[in-house]
Image (cartoon, rainbow, N blue to C red; front, side, top):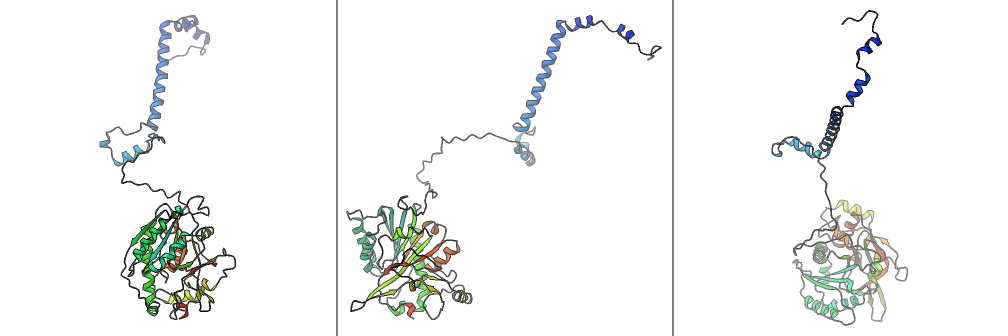
Length: 406
């Protein structure tokens, strides 16, 4: 293209452009305006559709362009990574279960607190029985005096390997106590029978011979466990173990123990022995409640793991501190002593301790069995085990030569 001589001339170029009036007339034509409007609408519509499609692909409608039957594992993974399916919950439309074979148990409301009576916390009293018919009238007389509301107390008994009429005597006493018109009846009672094939001699020397102690404690542990797992219900907050041969105990015992708010609580166990002149000898009964010693720990390291240490025999010198040799019943009954072993005459346990798996080992657990093994197990699980040295429960005098004297 040849440029004119002298370069570009604006006036010459302007003379070649159509006049502005002609351009204005062209733009003002109806056909041009309509065409421009249509083009503008198409552009805006296309942009809107493009944006919506992009958003839907990103959040809701993303997916491979193939049938789900043809999708690979990787396709599914990429697809699910983009899914955001809305889920609506309606709290006013619960699931209704009408089958009578399905039961719901909610343990969350079951607590063991110092406000047990106010909260109407249920107590389960457990008593293992063997040849115990002669003790039952006194046992139920003391039970009826307990001041903890009886409608919150359930009773359970296990009869094992008995040769006397324990079962008949128990049935008669239960009928008597539950039929009384003075609001003494308890909420419920259950009787469990289970024999373990263990026959304990009634001969005093043979009964307390060293060789008989470990098998005896293991058999007693099994009886306690069978009773516990047969009777413990979801609604129970406390478990109170009570032997049948208690002679005296405070009527407020359950409330007194609950007030300590400890996982396991035991009192001091003594006995009365009256001489012919009426003199009362206060004997110390339960040597199974003790504080561990370095001597006993050293002894346990030397023993086979299946050997059960029993207290009061020359074969085992433990050097432990025995709660029954401590205490003054005229002093503060709420004084506490942390224990490592406990006896089984009277024990209050928070029910969740048992529910957590702490039971009475019918084998050597840290070289202990039954109630002493229970205390060791409870402490291993992080629970508190305390005794009350000045709080005395009186055991029946058996006139036996106690193991501690051997």
